[in-house]
Image 1 (tube, helix red, strand yellow):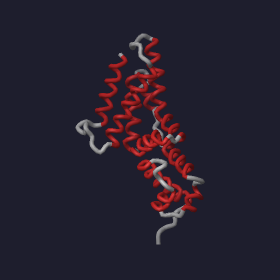
Image 2 (cartoon, rainbow, N blue to C red; image 1 turned 180 degrees about the vertical axis):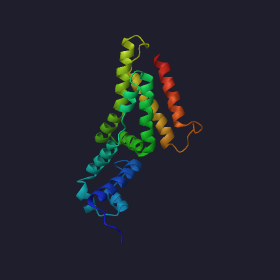
Image 3 (tube, helix red, strand yellow; image 1 turned 60 degrees about the vertical axis):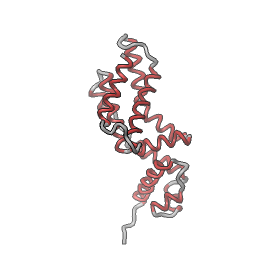
Image 4 (cartoon, rainbow, N blue to C red; image 1 turned 45 degrees about the horizontal axis):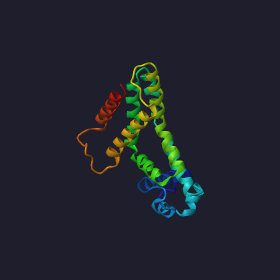
Length: 198
């Protein structure tokens, strides 16, 4: 006889299955019936924990936000050099996505589906990069240390480079740069970005 799960364990098992399914198929591609079938519970059990599919999706996003990466150590350890801090922040972010590629899949689905809760969540995940880049480039420009650049465009370019690298290394079945590690590519990408602004 198998052990009966506590309410908290049951809720966690529902979230884990939903996380995988939402990452594979997006919010609209998954039904409550599919989730309960894979968890092995009835719809009424699921609805005891989550009032709707939307509430379950938000719980999945909340679960991801609980594991959000912290850049505090990177900034505190290397707060004097823009490039060094940016390298540290990028490595923390990239490593978190490499260990949870379903985050990237959910982000892509949310962009296509127009799910506002998910879009807000993913915009906030990237906000640390864009804020850090925009603020520091503006400061460096004011000090005459870099050439004049549109700081918002530069932050967007950087975000796009990181996202493309993650798509290549985490989601694509064939990796045309399989002879390069993700760490090597991050270093090369940051070096190119720094050449662009100096």
